[in-house]
Amino acid sequence: MLHLFKYRFLQIIRDYSAMFWALAFPIILGTLFYLSFGHVGLEATGDSAWDVIKVAVLREDTSSENARAFESYLAMMEEEMLDIQDISKETEALDALNEEEIAGIYYIREEPSLTVAKNGLNESILTSLLESYNQNAAMFRKIAMTHPENLPNAVAALEDYRQTTEAVSLAGKDLNPDVQYFFALVAYACLSGIFLGVKSSLDGQANLTALGARRSITPTHKLTLVLVDMGVLFVIHFFNILILCLYVTRVLEISLGDDLGALLLVDFMGSMIGVCMGIAIGCLTRMSLGMKMGISVLFTLFPGFLAGLMFGNMKNIIELRCPIINRINPAAVLSDAFYCLGIYNDTERFTRCLLILALMCVCLLTVAFLGIRRERYDSI
Image 1 (spheres, helix red, strand yellow):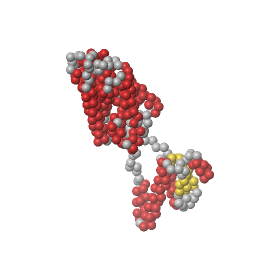
Image 2: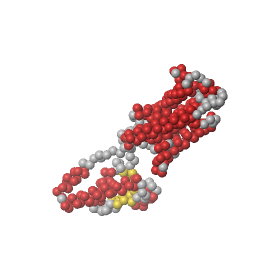
Image 3: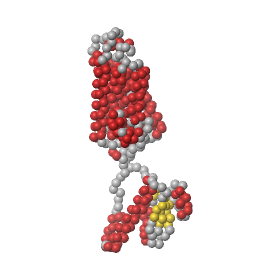
Image 4: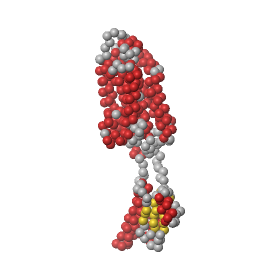
């Protein structure tokens, strides 16, 4: 058994065409992604940079107490959230607003106001700042009118305000949308085990190759040959995926999660699903090698496309329109598992992905087994 394993191992890794598609091509594709997208590392940084918002402040009437308080409020927000431009004339401020050089114009007067040119995130923040000030000012006026003795305590409480929340993404990691491409890339690489599986199945068919003819008349039990082939393919492709993941995490510095055991399990299941698909395709029909390889390309690229390999938001679109496709697409299931590892620690969702992959492997191996059992040759 051991010598058979070693023989098949050396034979398969010397098939440079299949090894190129299973190992080299995903690495090349990942490098091209990295060069195209730039540094899209997914490491948790502990804090995130916030771009201050450029605004103009026009002092129309500073005689009232409320106006002076609002001016002090904006001064407190400067450098933290606002970048107040040196603009004093309304015409200049409106021109800058129309040319999108600033996001808004604050007017300091008895009733402070804000002018914006469009709806957006920055404009919403500016509106929230004004609303926050107006609410606090109204609260202080009410306290001064009803319970003036509590006014010093209210002022002290406001001065003791501290930020108690920190904006981070799920699992404490900053998610660049381009990272989704790398999840889909590893999923595509897992499915590329199809090429190894098809080549192995070809080597067992007497009507297609001389090696298949020799193996058909060997005294070694056919089931033993099949099990050895599957074991060799799983080992080879598992190490292919490990090499790719090592390249992605160490060279490209893109995180696939901190749980090494879970990552190895996903890599193993991904290797199995790719190889099982290849074996099933190789055993179903007696097509030529070229035809089988063409089908293999279709069964790797199309699921990869649906998982977001070419268009990063494709999986999300499918999830909204027809989620069942993402449940039966092995590339989408694998991408989802890597998403759970690298971004969102959802144990239930991760377990569901593994169970779906295991069920797919069982179904594909059953199809392959039934196909092998039906193979009969009148003569060799």
